Length: 244
Image (tube, rainbow, N blue to C red; front, side, top):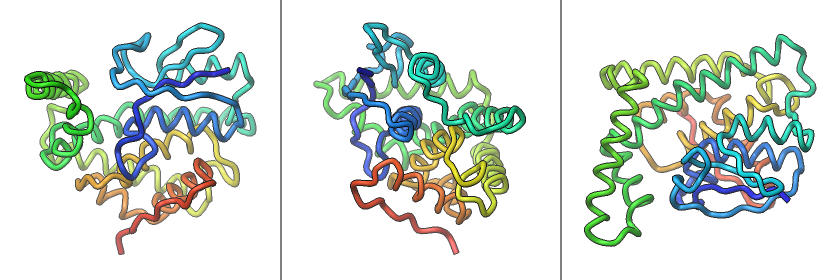
């Protein structure tokens, strides 16, 4: 049995507040692997001090990319099995763009922007006792700002940050085109990755220029809905309003 450790599903509009948790669980569902989930409010409990992480045969592994490598070698999970070498390379490049830059724009919109912080703060810290309920969020927000600065995105102006995010979204939209999925008729790991992030950008009620940019691409909105139906076919998927 595979045990999946992740944040509780408490952010309305997305299966999980972590796009990496959505990505990993979606991959497990699409491939049909049996698994159990366990809520981990504190990511420091994981082997990489972040979520998601899994436990397989008593071994705990962190980081969604390393977990997927393990699941591929141990359980044959390979959503890219139908792709040739070139398409696998394109898939890899798309995922790195999403996870290594678009991710940080999303983090900025949640942790730095007041509209995002007003939602994220109670989501993660409301259950803490006083006075930690006041101290810990400030410390965490400062730590995120340092990470943004260290990564580089935090050194840009607000307008520059969102322009970079909009460029990434436009690239994804252009690559997707009129196809149902990024590489044709079947969802791949790149689709799973894109879904994890897009549903976290356009799903929650967090206003930002990044969300506006995503909603401006109808094919990205449709892709998110389509992947949402695959992720949770037993419940009615939420519909997102695309920009005119």
